[in-house]
Length: 134
Image (cartoon, rainbow, N blue to C red):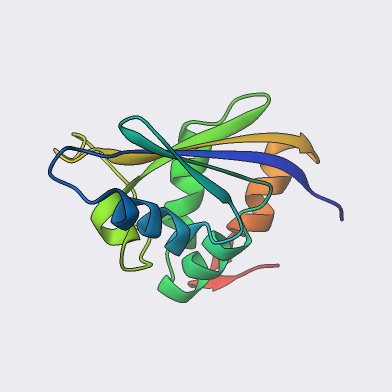
């Protein structure tokens, strides 16, 4: 199946942070995205969540990811937030509850093809006894 999506990642850069380290944290999770610096933030844009999907599989957190993706899913896409410090280590840690004091990595995914649910199934498939059903 052909997937067509737009991914936009925004991470704040606080005065106490090194901009390049924040950019590196974004690249750890979204290596195929084009990263640029704007005043006070890093913005990355891409067209896939392939590496994120690999990390979700490796960390065995597909059910958690599906729950987060569907929790903020709409007709045209979904969004989620990741902890910046975990991302700097190439680890996926979803933000639940209060935002981190350094700010979180906000991700917005617009799905053009196929449906939002089908794309979420592609990135984070359902599991049975912890094993992906693909």
